[in-house]
Structures are given as structure tokens and as C-alpha cells.
Length: 169
Image (cartoon, rainbow, N blue to C red):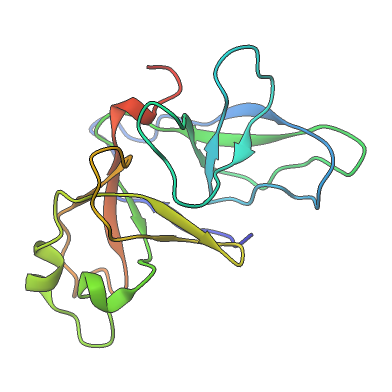
């Protein structure tokens, strides 16, 4: 997985809300989660958080805990932890698009192309360990494209997560 795939866009009115530790299951190829990656948790009696899969989140199906603030500490045989910045209503994030030209953020930025996608409900792609943003709008998709100056934030898209993707909702 790649570091810093998703970054916070600015600060809320009252600043940084802090991180919370969550348990990560041993096994696989540690670390399972890098800082800047989306973290999910199954509802119910689930103890562990995991990195988000591709083409997610889906409203009412995938439950975001937040964005990893640290790299997880599990090993092949011992459970570990990861600090996660919780998803809060009104918070927004920057992410690279899967296809930069689709969002108008490629080598020749186009604000009009980007603006045409504002409000689109999209998902996050995971390919070769890198999280990027898909561009297909669907009513069940859990991210919303938000306004952004494409010349100021070159190569990025600003998104928010829909409330139906929050694990505490």
C-alpha cells in the first residue's frame, strides 16, 4: 500500500479532532494499513479494522472508521494497532483521480471539466496498492466530489464521505 493516498483538506472550525487507536489483525503482509489510507470496520461484534477494498465505499454496506494517521503495527503472528483520524460530518479530503483528464486535473488543468463533476457520487479505487478516485456517478456510491481550485491543488480531487458510510451512524 502507498503512504498518504488521502490527505485532509484544511481544518474544521475547531481544528484537528485527534486520532483513535484501533486493533489490526495479525497475518497477511504487514503492515496492512499505511498512513493516509481509508480504514473500514464491519458492524457487529467485529474487533478489527481493515484497509478499504476497491470500488468502495458503498452507502449502507461499507462502514468507514476514518483515514489512517499512522502505519499499522501488526506482524504475521501478533495483532497490532493503527491510529485513525475519524470521519466527521463536514470534513473533506484530497485524493488523486484514477484518470486525471476525466476530472480536468491532468497536465493541462481545466476548471470547467472539474466543475462538471462536482456533486458526483463516486467510489475509491485500489490498484497496485494505491488509492485513487473513480469518476462514475451512482446513487449508492459513498464519496461526493466537492469544489476545488484545480490550479491550486494540482492533480487532486476534493471529496467528502456520505453519512451512510460512517461506522457510527
